[in-house]
Length: 215
Image 1 (cartoon, rainbow, N blue to C red):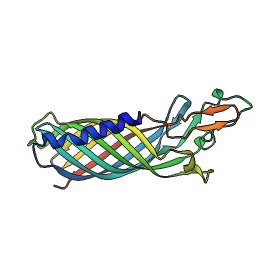
Image 2: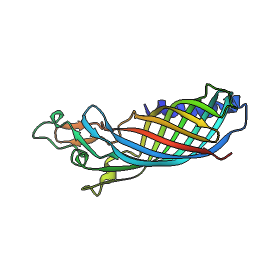
Image 3: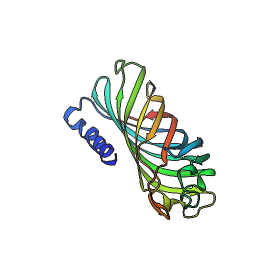
Image 4: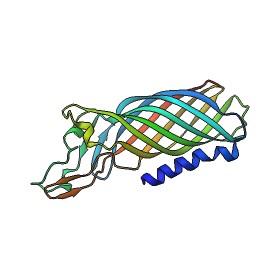
């Protein structure tokens, strides 16, 4: 999965060199995340609010098609989550993430999405609907949890996912809603007394954001 996401990022970034039709535009965006956890052993997850902000460049390919790489800070985690302990022997080791998942957690990522953006209306229109989708790579900057001071040691340094969303552009301003589906486990594998346990916790986030095209 990691190789697939990285390959998609590389392919999308290399496309403009062959098809650049107009001048790229640069801007800033920020918004609010409602984040939680997924995975086959997560039985419930209450969303926690976090913020996101960063920059983007929109590289036109055709009148209604652009590639939009972004670099954004994003706070993830969960307000409260429940782990499925039935998957482990009663006399076995508790999973490293089994305790902290019951309390609020914060995961800070530097994320690099590369989005294929579609604008069905003409480029010169003041109001333009937009649709976008693409892969995203996240780099863990830090993590906090109420009880575990070594919490970040349980997490992998990178995350991989896909983003889908849509919104509206109004001149230089834009608003959008997007869903980030984590495809890779963010918790590390570990060795328990009953054998090897693979990581299974995955990021999920719904984001509402606003953007400003500077030039």
